[in-house]
Image (cartoon, rainbow, N blue to C red; front, top):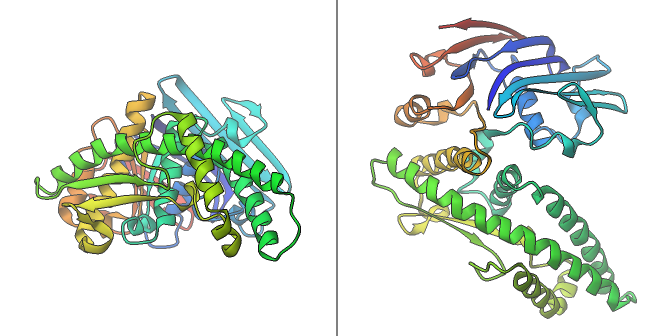
Length: 368
């Protein structure tokens, strides 16, 4: 998958831009707060259907403007394709290959990208929520139904938690209601569990090999999906029944807590380096290597399952990597297209195919 062109109007600090990209390494460079990350944000919007920096689309509108428009042209195994999204007030316009589409879910899945940005460096040391977020984003790019199952699960969880809070307060409740939501949660959770289990298995294969290569064979990576359901289960009905059993047997504890204590919303991705917990024992350099291996492997799994590489977006992270890791990213691109943002152009000397100077929301490109 290769981006050919990105266009934007009144998006963040961009009044208007039309940027062409090369198939290899593209560098967006310039001082801070000039608009480098805004381009990455606009591109990645088409992969997830939302910004990775803000919760609401209105935050993306250029100051003093009434709305914004972003447009992406790219080449996939299906040929030349395009996506467009515009927001003006309460109106939303979405287009796929110049045809109007009504839902954001119709847009997600067409264009695939892997994003690596500074917050990702907390994947190892931060809490389980960060790793669950990583799994959700990564799995949704590979399994088309994942987003719907997870969305339905969250709705069922919200309703079940509401009932638990009422029971905690001693309010009268029809037990059939909480049983119904428990059944719904178990149904959705069984799908989520199997998707995540399969994804982590695939991810481990690539991430372990990449980390070994980065470390000259000195470091071994271990990944496992930590769930309230026993690992390795493959029969969906059996997984569903196990979730139902857990939710039923834990009801008294959950009433006391006022929340659901078990399920995919509490699971984690266990990361080990040389057999020890990376969260507890990994050095800062090892943490960076692990995250780099995870992000590159995310792209490898997409290639394995979908037939082509996603676009790799590296937003302001090269400065966090030492020379060895930077060189690995830039020299081992193969068929991949990479878009990098950084302040120091010198970090990528000798590796770029297209350099774009960014200043005040303006973009000037020069090919090597």
